[in-house]
Amino acid sequence: MAQNEAVDVVLVGAGIMSATLAVLLKELDPAIKLEVVELMDSGAAESSNPWNNAGTGHAGLCELNYTPQAADGSIDIKKAVHINTQFEVSRQFWAYLSKKGAFSSPRAFINPVPHLSYVEGEKGIDFLKKRFELLKQHHAFAEMEYTEDKSVMNEWMPLMMPGRPADQKIAATRVMKGTDVNFGALTNKLLKHLANAPDAQVKYSKRVTGLRRNGSGWTVSIKDVNSGNSREVDARFVFLGAGGAALPLLQQSGIEESKGFGGFPVSGQWLRCDNPEVVKKHQAKVYSQAAVGSPPMSVPHLDTRVVDGKTSLLFGPYAGFTTKFLKHGSFMDLPLSVRMSNIGPMLAVARDNMDLTKYLVSEVMQSMEQRLDSLRRFYPEAKAEDWRLEVAGQRVQIIKKDPKKGGVLQFGTELVASKDGSLAALLGASPGASVTVSIMLELIERCFPEKTKGAWAGKLKEIFPAREKVLAADAALYHKISAHNDEALGLVESSPAQSYA
Image (cartoon, rainbow, N blue to C red; front, side, top):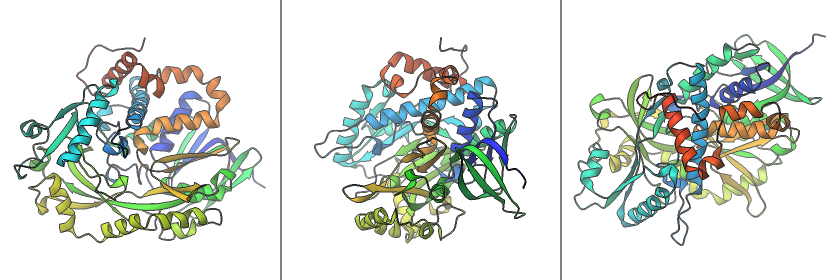
């Protein structure tokens, strides 16, 4: 009987997560043998595709749901600070690769775009002002500006101001050093860099059909979707980074840690404008507050997007419901994910989230005119002919066991790893792509603990001079590293090369 091909690592899915982990592992151990397998015929075809996500470069600068307000009126900024420092860790990795010459022209995937928050009414203004005063005290948000002056807002967001009622109470904050990130372009740069490395393969049009224990590792069955031919690969470590498809594969692995997890798929749509006359009047990402009773992923925003050198505007997202786990998936994805171990949590979530289900169904049923009405809250003079509907990527929100409620719906990402560290999966959605590097570093620390403390420690310190906690606490170091990253990524006018030393 023919011997299976053997590799050190198999990564399922060629999105931003697998691409980042694969390149990171190759930097830490150039001799590592790895294979990326992807169902589609190209990389970044699902959630990493630039039209399937907002590309905000989430840094907590404008997203109001990252600074929740408690019933007593107090505002917690911890999550915004944490996401900001996680994004700075991502930028350290991209800056390191750019300096090394791993990929040319960072501006092909990252561009400076101011990040604004915008609110209406006295309650919204009170919240934004209090949030601003708290964030401004932290060094990561020191450059934030606040205004209730409409003439200033006219400079900040000229597209959004004409046509408003004269007596409307509004306020905004702005941070100039926000970014727009094309995660599709970044993913493909990482995959290209990887494909040029020895003992690293990226294989497309391949479906993982089996996953079974094999001693201390795994045997992965892989089928070519074009020829129908199958092969088996033995791997010491497997990463399931296949977006919505990660959950069914995790269930197939049978690891104890997978029990009780379910998925709740949410689809999305955007309104997109490519009219250059409109686009040039809005150079910003402007986030507002979600409507009362709607979920966090429904926070409306009007965004500048830079994709393949062309600038467009996106407005949304408009949520929806489908039983597919991937944009190119099957309507059977959700029903086939139900197991004895997760049916309890899934039913509990269905019971406790009827409002969310009704909201998603109502979003699906919206007419184009209703969608334009939402846009006109931001941009009162929007014309229907300038906008078209763009279908976004699928997000599979996590359902997990909860001792009190039976099951909870979780918005965010979750890393699930086997006890022996031989298999890991990433479930969930936002802020996802922006904090990929932090999530993959956590995976490496959990699944390769001896190496991160030993052979890989020096290289990790070289790539990441400061991690999240240090960046959050040390203002001088934060500014130094942030300035270095700006320069390496071409986000500022070229200055003499700075070093961390």
